Structures are given as structure tokens and as C-alpha cells.
Image (cartoon, rainbow, N blue to C red; front, side, top):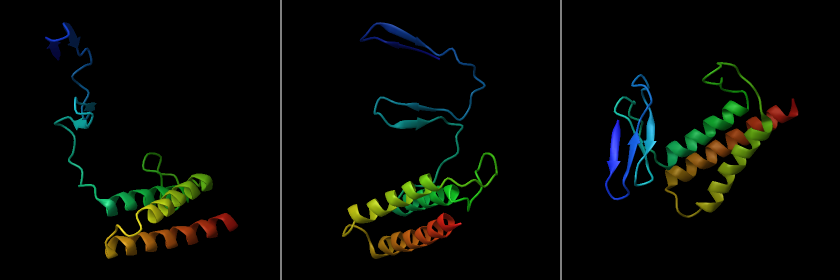
Length: 122
């Protein structure tokens, strides 16, 4: 891949092998652009963001195996930090969420806090 920037007078040469697939690159707009070989991801909305953070907390609580190693490992400080982030988001978004989003946030936080208390006591 070779591009020439006429305005600045330099050439960019991509010396990577063509065997690399599924790469992402940051475009001029500052957004990450996916290569044509990558799988489409589901749309991101507030609920999916909250589920993502919840899954991260569950991983750190040892409730979900690591997707790479398939091992369950506990890291309670990271679990607490993720739960605290969810709590902060709940406070900062108060009054701006739909009833369904508020309910989801409340249920997830309650569940994660109880799981954390149970693990911290052990």
C-alpha cells in the first residue's frame, strides 16, 4: 500500500505483509476504521455498554472465565473499581435514562455489589 500526500510532499509505504487480517486503523476523522475482513459488531447503546462493564466485573470476581485463558481468576480490587464506575455512571446519568435503562442499572449494580460482598468475605 502506498499513498502520496500531495500537500506535504511525502510518501507512506506499508511494509507489513498482506497476511495481517482484521486490523483497524485510525482514519483522518479520528475514528477507528475496521478493515473489510473484520466481523461486524453489534450497535453500541447505553445498555450494551452497561452489560460490557458488568461482564468485566464478573470476570474480575471470578464468575466468568477469562476469554483467552479460560481460567477463572479473582481480582477483587479491579472488580470493586468496575462496580464503582457503574455506580458513578448511575449517579451522573440520573434523570437522563429511560425507565428500562434505570432498572437495568439498578439490577446490575445490586447483583454485582452482593457478589462482591460475598467474595470479599471469603
